[in-house]
Length: 256
Length: 310
Ligand SMILES: Nc1ncnc2c1ncn2[C@@H]1O[C@H](COP(=O)(O)OP(=O)(O)OP(=O)(O)O)[C@@H](O)[C@H]1O
Ligand SMILES: [Mg+2]
Image (tube, rainbow over all chains, first blue to last red; front, side):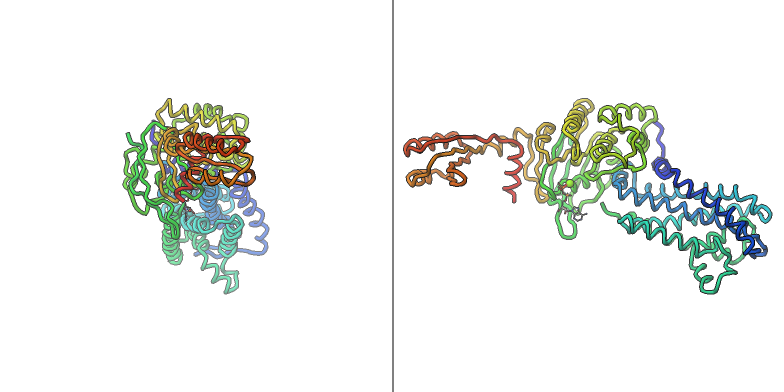
């Protein structure tokens, strides 16, 4: 018998239970429709967006923002898995089987990593014609995109996990997680440029980790790695590390 | 070989002592019944033995492995059906078994074969394509128990596995479990509140109350030990003062007037006491309306052991 790594076995399970038509529609179809419908509809209102040393047209700006948004969205999966596992007794069942808590936590990270990268790649591929003109992929920027995706996935995955550990009721979980994620989505630079926003909103944009993630991914796609983006990377990594430690602590302490 | 051994096992929660100094020595290759009233500590002992929680005090050895040192090694060799339901709501019954086998690293071919065998053994063929979310509670429980047999194990913990099962499914499960113990040398640690079930299935039984073990023995030995105190009831027509005073010399009997006059014998030597009482009834010209002896079963022993300890 070939021994398959326990983390891979759990990832296999996670993907089997999470991937369903509803999820795929939310994860793939919605961003694509949004890019094409909103992207072109708003072009009339938003002419061009300055980014680094470049001027991007709005569809290109939006499509690149959508990648960050999609990574954040895919991390909802880890919250949903943990929450469902606790609600339906699978957490205890797995923990009484040939797995450790570390296996469980790592398998969730790998799962959101896979879904995050997959959907980022998909949006990049489909959105490519939209931002084709301004793209500047190179040896620095592609690793930057992957790095940003992974750190962002860990950061938002940790937030989703913390919420799922802390909340027991179904209503509470759904309300809180949707509020947090919706707030992150719309109070960020994913859909609107910070330049057009009034001052208080602009401040809120930069209290929101999604703005950092989106900026890093944009910097990667359009080859505009400025000092500000490097600072954003450091903040993102620091925040992800702190939230990850908290999420892991909470999961490790979870009682039966 | 000792399959489970615990020494002075204790588990304290903030305000309760759930397990209070449990010493167990359980041999392999048997069904070991673990009985006790609600809140006695059965599930807590199972969670301790399966390494889900750690003890406040004491030592646990399962399959010869120290649970404090190598919990994962224990978990790799045991199967667990906990008291609460566990299932993947979005998977079908069939897929649940299949995926569970995958999680236990069972070869794909073997997985397929076992899935078919178990679907048939647990009468799940008709609902194999149904989603777990759409199953009835008893059907879901059957899948949960069946699922555990997807992987090989030396020791299986079953915490009230028959709750919600209909009588036929219940009997089918008990026979399936017996078969497994006979054929593969599996050891089963079994809790239930249905004492006839324990009597049918278990080779040995422990009774736990308030976190303490009250008795451990085979069902027949338990009956010998605790059940030899038989109860005989004699329904009589009237109770005279003379009868009262004569019966008061026999401590093993008591007189009840409601709902009808009855002499109740409660004794380890109830046959001898009965002879004496019959003599007295004869002397006092008391008519006997009816006479009944209550046979001992596990339920009575359970009630007695638990009652005494309270
Ligand atoms: N997580 C917990 N926190 C606090 N107390 C607990 C916890 N788990 C169990 N207890 C307490 O420990 C005692 C034993 O509980 P346990 O679940 O082991 O009982 P049981 O014998 O399995 O009962 P039942 O037959 O109802 O399943 C109970 O008094 C219960 O309230
Ligand atoms: Mg219990």
